[in-house]
Amino acid sequence: MREATVTRKTKETEISVNICLDGGSFSLNIPSGFLSHMLDAFAKHAGIGLKVEAKGDVHVDLHHTVEDIGIVLGNAIKGALGEKRGITRYGLAKVPMDEALVEVCLDISGRPFFVIHGEDVFHGKAGDLDLELIPEFFRSLAFRAGITMHMTIFACGNGHHLAEACFKAFACAFKEAIAVTGTDIPSTKAHL
Image 1 (cartoon, helix red, strand yellow):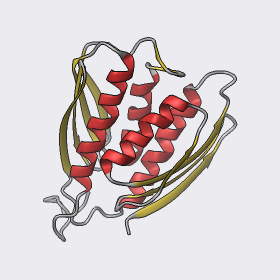
Image 2 (image 1 turned 135 degrees about the horizontal axis):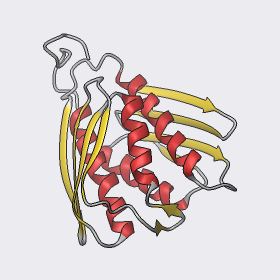
Image 3 (image 1 turned 60 degrees about the vertical axis):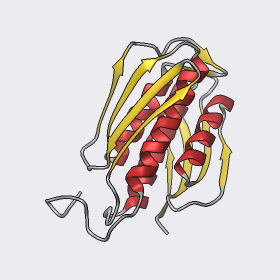
């Protein structure tokens, strides 16, 4: 099983993530109902097992907690992938959510990069979450996991739909990229 558990404790947060890339159970105990909803969608559509326990200085706001969940999840993904032997490596998914349309293209390359193409649309709130934290979450995750990720916003309107399209597009692209389709490391360098 491709699985990892990572824990991180700072003055601001205490986060523990267990991920199993080959499926498994799902549980969340985090101080954001909306982020819980998004991580539930990610786990379901990526076909992974995911457990997240998080405490943070939410009396300030959710920024540190959301960013640090991205950091720890990224570290867990990197650990679960190991040397990445046999994975597809690349993933691409375009997901509509009513009026929102988002595409995620990623490469599990070991070269971290994250960019959003399209309009500056992450404003306001969805549930208890400031939408401006969504790019922070994905940036933290991509840089810690060693993923090159391009997210393109083609259309948006409702903030909840935009966020959900982002997480589901990431999940579908991630599922494609982590699929084991061979035995070699998918690189001309024989290392990722």
